Amino acid sequence: LCAGSGANGCGPAEEPKTGFLCTADSVDFGPAWDGEVLEHTFVFENFGPAPRSVAAIKADCGCTVAQLELTPPGGGASAVPYVHGSPIPPGSRLAVKVRYDTRGKKGEAPRTITLYGDQGNVAVTVAAAIDAWLAVEPERQDLPLLDTGAATSTDFVVTGTEGRPFTLK
Image (tube, rainbow, N blue to C red):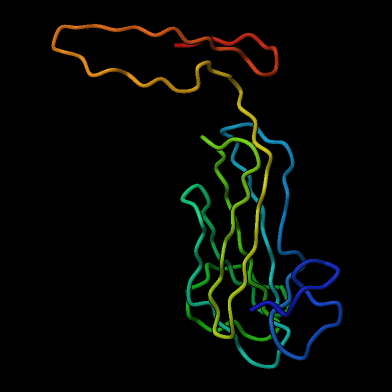
């Protein structure tokens, strides 16, 4: 799908004669809080002489969803949802709108979205360094198997990571 790797990300240093050109193949959101929803749109343009198509799109994690929208040549018409396998005419733009839900993620957490095209595949990546709002110690507690009517208890220490007061309900 993508023309190659060049100075500006996915696009080539010199424009090839056929193919899709995208302005960047990755975005790093930098620091983010656990639970934030991060969004980015990657834009591909068919600058070749023939129509192209995308058969499928797949993210490597259920926390990441991608939608495709097609803008016809000239950019005057509104974008419409792209139907997988339909032709992408020369001069058209394909927007890959990515939504990344960071809930439950921790640390460096890149996600890859792959477009499966008629002339090859291309992957785009979103990344963030995710930090939690709260810290819980211990992070994990294995509970013993209990008989009916038996009880057990465990103490946890919960602290805010940015020093603001919080309430647990």
